[in-house]
Length: 142
Image (cartoon, rainbow, N blue to C red; front, top):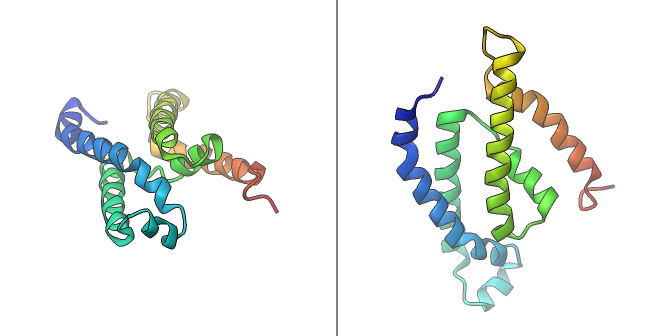
């Protein structure tokens, strides 16, 4: 039920958020180290955490305003491609676009002529799939 007017309204915020996320991707990798190590590399840890959190909140708010909550995608991407943010960021964007398009198409065809929200289908189908990936992950295995 979204229109191109919604896309035009959110495009500047999305572009700004993506540019900032790409610029800060290397800092995310550094912040995954211990605080002492990051500080010894010359990083202001508190400032970077606040800045990265603001960018993450901006991107999450934009996606939630348009599409609803899709919270498991970055975690799913981390399990599939690892935690290097320069790979994780584009993979998560492509995975999110593909899965949301798939959920939207399924929502339009399952109960035609009615429509099931794509975010509902993402939650119903994606939640269990994420749990399966989580259980199969070596990092989270018992």
